[in-house]
Length: 99
Image (cartoon, rainbow, N blue to C red; front, side, top):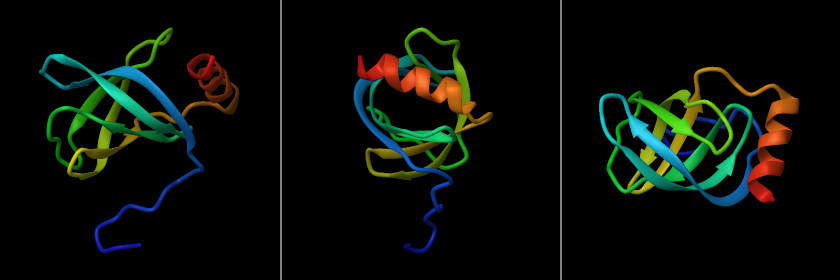
């Protein structure tokens, strides 16, 4: 692990879909969701963001999810949810996004 990199809290499931991403106080953007875990996800937003920045994510069929930027490298961004998904909710979300 390189200096400043945050260790993963859980295994991530690779996905390929679009979700909505919004910095607090900003407009919403459509972003590529690269992978997902109960604790967070990785996205490719069209704007630069900074670690610890507050954001909201909107996954189809769910309420907006408050989160923060855990790390950012160029256009590759790791997001940590304020509240992790329960395992059953995580499984439902993955099934919905894969289907």
